[in-house]
Length: 135
Image (cartoon, rainbow, N blue to C red; front, side, top):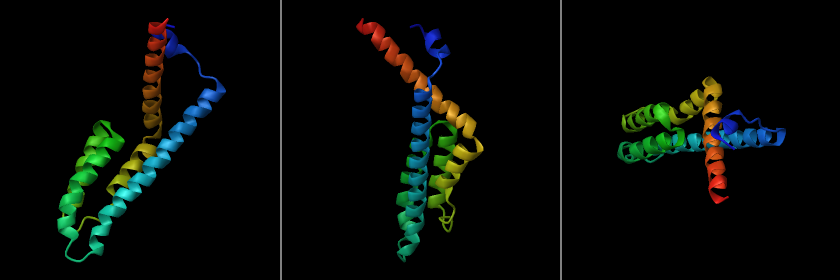
């Protein structure tokens, strides 16, 4: 099967359902992780005197985690925003990672789903090349 066949091949109903299930699982997992990252950032105020010192440590960790989770330019921007937001005083109440989730999965849902499918198409191409190599 050539690359054109991979690009042009249609998916059967089971494959479509599997892809939708995988996308929704990924989306839900990222929502839980986003809320958890924001909650940890807000928890620093629970320990008096620890808030700003804890934020200096947590800010870069949250920024890197956000970048890794959301990838691309928007992930880079959100990671930088999250790191700055966590390190700046009195800004921990802003749920930056959760806002990124809303942007990716509600505002730009079609583009996010298209990127998800593009990643899966690339995986399919690699599997087909492997199959051809093993013949």
